[in-house]
Structures are given as structure tokens and as C-alpha cells.
Image 1 (spheres, rainbow, N blue to C red):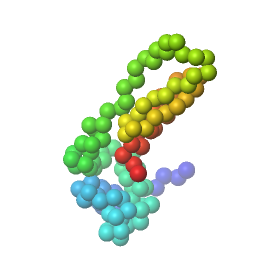
Image 2 (image 1 turned 90 degrees about the horizontal axis):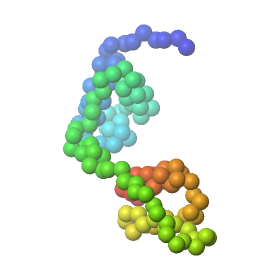
Image 3 (image 1 turned 45 degrees about the vertical axis):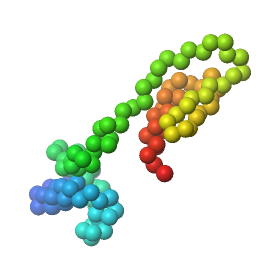
Image 4 (image 1 turned 90 degrees about the vertical axis):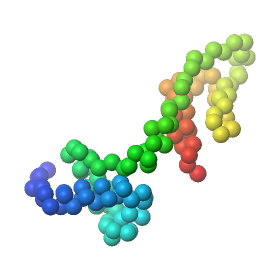
Length: 123
């Protein structure tokens, strides 16, 4: 694959644009519409500049929610006198419950719980 010569002016433009996006509080789509930019170009340059090093970040108040969210803590599960065909029910946040057979693989269970907890804030 041939490497293109970097255009410092274009890179500087996109660094300024990404900084403006970080300060805008808008979604990528809304920002690109407002600035009349192609979303594909935005994502390309964001990825390219991240790979090259210093990347403009969103302001701290926008990222605080992510920093405050802790991954779910896993504790050992000890099953006492459980009938052979009984399942396991996990109570999750938001009143959700998850019913599984006791033979469900632990690594898949951990991934499933992480995915469910990550999706908690989404509609």
C-alpha cells in the first residue's frame, strides 16, 4: 500500500475541527451537518489523528458520566442444595432478571452481564 505525503494544512484543519467538535457538545451527525462536513471524513480523520498521537478530547464534564460508571463487581456464586435441573436467576439493575441454566459457561456469563450493564442507559 502506497503511503501518501501528509498535508500539514489538512491535518491542522482536522485537529482544529476535532477540538471544536469536542467543545460543541453535539453528536457527530449534528456537528457534521452544522459544519457541512462528510461524516465519513470526520470518522476517518478522527481515527487517523488518534493513531498519530495527541488527540483533542471532549471536555471533562462530558466524560464524567463514563468515569463514574464502574464495571459490575463479580462475586463468587455458591450454590447450596439446588435440585439438579434448577437454573440460576440473576437480579440486575433496573428490575431486570436473567435466568440461565447452571451449566452456562462463566466466561460467557461475564460477557453477557457486562453487555447488559453497558446497555443500561440506552433505550
